[in-house]
Every structure is written in C-alpha cells, then in structure tokens.
Length: 388
Image (cartoon, rainbow, N blue to C red; front, side):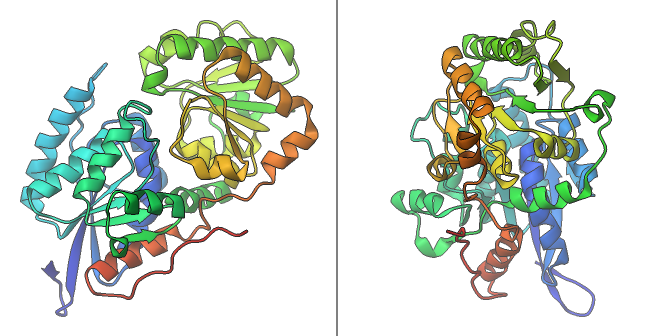
C-alpha cells in the first residue's frame, strides 16, 4: 500500500500474464483497476508468447512496467517454468505489491501465483474454477489451474458451474465471486471498432466462411493430422465455402497442419491475426472449428456455432446451452458435424440462437469491485447470472 499525494492510500495491484489469451481477458480488468480511486495498477508480462502478446498490449493501450521476455525457440514447459519463476520472484520482491492478479490456466498463471505465495502476497485468480477432471486433458492447463486455486485468496469464477467446482474442492464460498467472463467485455470493445484486415485476401472474403484454429499441445501429432485431413475433405466437398486458417506460429503445429491444406484453392492460410482482426473474422464467419478455450466463449457471443476439436472441455456451460459441440479429432466426426451445420439451416439456427452463458460485458466491473471488497474498500459485487 502506498501513500499518494493528498494522503490517499493506494493499494498496488500487480497483474501478471504471458500469453495472448491472458492479455485479452485481463485488459478490461487492468482498465478497471486504473479507473479505481483506491487501486494502482502494475502490469508485468513474462513474454511466454511474444508477437501475439505485444499486439494485444498495443490494441488495449497497455504498457507493462516489467517484461521478462522469457520466450525461446521450441521452449519446453520446464524452460517456461524455471525462467518465469526466477524472473517473477525478483520482480515481486522488488515491487512488494499488495496483491497479484493472474488469469486462467497457463504456466505463467500458475508460476506467478506460486511466486506471490512464496512472498506471502494474496493472489486473485481471474477465470477460476474451470475443470475437466482429466489432469492430462487439456495439458498442462488442467493442473495449472488446479494448483493456482490452491494458493489463491480470491477466486473470480466466470460461471456458477465454475463456482460449484471450487466449492466442491473446499474453497470457502465467501472467497468466490461469479463475475461472468472478462473475454466478453474485451470482445464487445473490439468488435465495435470493426478494425480493418491487414491481409487483402480477408477483405475480399465473400460467401460462407468457416474459421479454423488449432494449436493444443494434446493434439500435436496424429490428432492434429486427422483434423487437417478433415478440413481438406470439407474444402473439396464445399468449393464455394472459404475455410480460413490463421496458422499458429509454433512450428510443431505448422509442420502437421499446413501440408494437407496448402494446395486447396478455397483454403486461406494466414499468419496469426491480431486480436482485433481475429474478432472481426469471427464476426464475419458462418461457423467456427477450433480447439481454443477462449473461442468457445467468444463465438457464442457473436451468434456463431462452435465445434470444438477436443475430447473434453472445461466450459461445459456452452455445451449444455447448445452453442458449442465437442467433435474431438476424429476425421469422420468433424466432417459429419461441419456438414450438418452447412447443410441443415434448422440445426444451424438452434446453435446460433442459443443463450450465451458466459457474460454480459460487466465482468471486469465485478472483478474490480471484488478486489476492492477484499481490501475493505467496497461492498460485495453482484453475482453474474445469464439470462434465461
């Protein structure tokens, strides 16, 4: 806590992240902290991602106070953990914040929480309580978020299901606030800007577009190869539909995913898109085929059916609501489910019009109020409840 001019005590809230998804989901929270009369924002990035992370910081006008820049080619989980823990330990000891905020389930999130715990500094976990109950799926995210829950002092759960998961693990209910997901706050902001594409081919898109993203570690190798073959079959079956694949930068992904698709005239492979352009592409798409976590939340907010190329999901609310369907990485299943959405207008409408369970654009406000309440500066926030 710092004494500012005029005698106002400001609580220093350090926000730590390292990847693009974390940056997107924490940007509205950082903005809310900056608007608070009682909180001071200190932003630290590990650089677990690099170019994609920097793009999001520029988009939301965030200037980190510390950048550890830990990324190396073909880095292992051990590499990320060791470098992030050493760097964050030094920064936290030097800054001595009143609180450390982490988001989600990346290695950066877990390591930042651990580094704060070692210094006996309270941890706030944004997007807390997601679970698949399979420690290796997704890997390493499921264990990262479980370990983070063990050291967090305040848990900001996006949904009531996530809250129930935490309560079942003996987290005290009074330490949990259901906020909705902050990704919806960010998405509303960016989609409203309707940012231009830098790739001229995207500006020329016409007709139906199927957006594809794939990068999950547990899908590397043959599972991702099956997904690529499925997309190739779909591209041949629907020559008037454009299949757009923003290719992840990881060479392990590219070496498997791209070769079967490069020679298809209606498959457009692009470099990774800045978040603003990717949000516009989601809005311009007819449906989304993905293994991403965040896209499962964002797509339904835009009325887009989402097919998830994973066997499990920590976001069961969307499956239950009907906005998301798990298709795994079985080639025939992927082809069948995409075909159904492309051919059956009634089936498409059911998925596109289902209620989004993830947020109302007020998650960051609730998150900041929960932080202020933790410090005794405000009353408890209202819990988010999706419209029926």
